[in-house]
Length: 458
Image 1: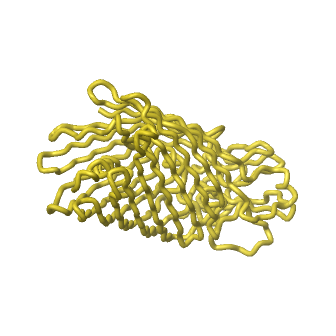
Image 2: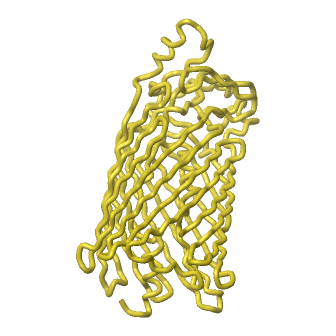
Image 3: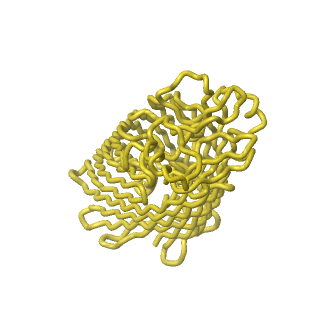
């Protein structure tokens, strides 16, 4: 590798967001999608000229830790702790281990629309009911979950220019188990300034929701839960205790050092998901012509999904006249056979402050179209549909994240950083015309959240 490109190549190898591997986070569609956005940069390393990452000593562990708080206004709150350890051996073999623990509590939207009168819903377990006030978005306030996740990765040179890696994944929640394996091969050429890679992963997930798996499109049982035949009638709305889902991913990547100041990365991913993809906790409101709720039915989604995406990223290190700032800009386009497509633009600027600290402003823009079976509600006279979901997370939406990170290098080379961001998600109607009773209701409420994080590398 020529000396002019040494700096950019070092940045590439030390920044996990530029590696041509992409961890699988395919899970049940729930609030963890938002938490994933919040933690997308968790444990990421910002490299600035005055605070450059030093090479890790052979046979010594390097640890990265972080604690994050994510809080939506009047909805879900989450706390997450991560610790990751990396050990490099004398023959350039690398072992990486990561433990993640997160807890979520609060109120989660159940999919029904707001009404001008109070609404009563049965809890997913079938034990008890809750009431949503007139004009309020229906939220199940018993939402609670704890997740423990373990990841391990082994990386080693196979030849002078080929590096291989393999890893495993285990994630356990109260009602969810995910097991996965992955592998990756990377080939360096052009004096190690260019790298092509290919990664494969496979995940097997099992759902065991409290109360069982709802019968698709069946009516939610609402009434006197103390009645003698309640359990029998509730059981008629269930089809089993558990369901499975499998996910296979392929990722092809290319990275290129342009010069000593600039590096680029390009990825293409293909994902095949089969099995239970319905959210067992979501319902759809069935309305009359005036817009008043007559029934609530459990949603139903297709049992397969193919997702594809392209990703482009560029990092540029400006000269001294711009305070040694590093610009990091990326764009991702995703599309699938559900009719969803999305655009993501993510921009960061790492700006040195003095000799041992930096500030990193961040802005992220996301825009998504709706799934072809998304409907915020159903009118009684509508033709029966096979697939339907009112989950706003697969509807049309735009979201923005803005914030900043402040980091400093401590005595001994350890790094401490703080991040504070504001997240705003704005669902839209996708062209649906509201009946009279809904015209005074907020059926596409904005979701706002504050994200706070502290990280420490040692």
